[in-house]
Amino acid sequence: MLTKTLTKSALALTVVFLLCGFSKQETPAGQPSAERKAQDALPQANDDMWKTFAKCKVHLDPKKYTYSIDYTPEVKAMEGKPFTISGFMLPLEPKEKFTHYLLSKRTPTCPFCPPGEPNEIVEVFSKKPVTWDEGIVVVTGTMHFTSNPEMGLFFQMKDGDSMSTAPFKDKNKLPVF
Image (cartoon, rainbow, N blue to C red):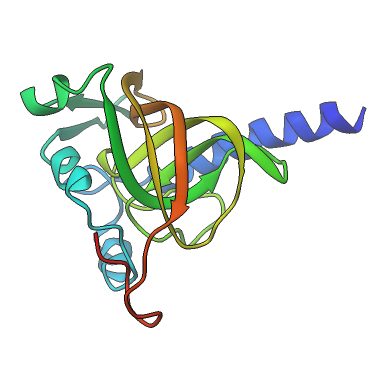
């Protein structure tokens, strides 16, 4: 009974979590500009993979409140291939260890709202259960595309592995990649 309640609660929180960050849209599609400005002052994962994903244009249909994305040829060529990316974990399962989570370029500031744009989020399915880490982590897996226009999810990593905390050269500064 408790497991069913937790599962239903987790599903409800996941929907709220995903919709919260992408609900109010301004140009371009994504966070309101004031929220984005505040997010820009927080730590970010700045590896080249996020720069590659940023070239994919995201569009919002204001009547349907759905997203679409234009993948670049460079990103399309990544389908089914291994890639490595760093970011902040946003768990989607109410467990101490989990295998399904979001990885975000930007620091999460709300437990129910993914920060940033849809091209700054990767849905991760890991091989082995992992525990949450509040810092920037590095994950390697296989690139797949998903189309979830209601939730703004377009990038997916399958068989995520090698999760580790990113190296810090100075504990008071961001990791260097």
